[in-house]
Image 1 (cartoon, rainbow, N blue to C red):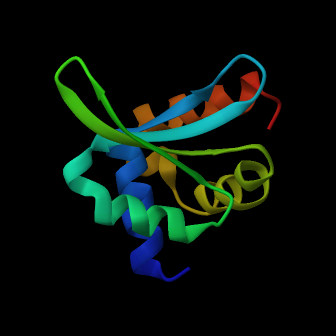
Image 2 (cartoon, rainbow, N blue to C red):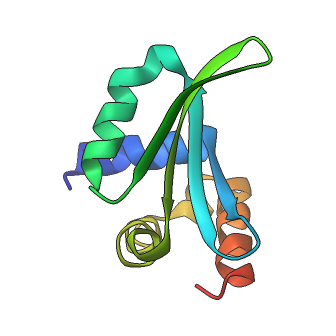
Length: 106
C-alpha cells in the first residue's frame, strides 16, 4: 500500500470509523452515505476479505458499511494502524482503537 492510500484510509477511519466489536470479536467499521460508493469500492479493493454491506436505507438515510474483522483485522489492518502515529494524530481515535484492542485481546 502506498503512502497516499495509507493516509486516505487512516484519515477516513479517524474521521468516520468505528473501532469496536460485537461482543465476540473486534471489528473496524466505516459507514457513509451511498453517494460515496466509488470510495467504498476502493476500500473493498484494499483487502479481498474486507466486507461491504448495503446499500441500506434506514431513518431517511442511505448508506454503505465497510467492515474488517477476524484474520484480516489481525493480520492486515491492525499492523497498518500500528505503523502510524495515531496517538499523535488524533488522541480520541487512538483511545477508541486502544480500547478495542484491549477488550478483544489484540
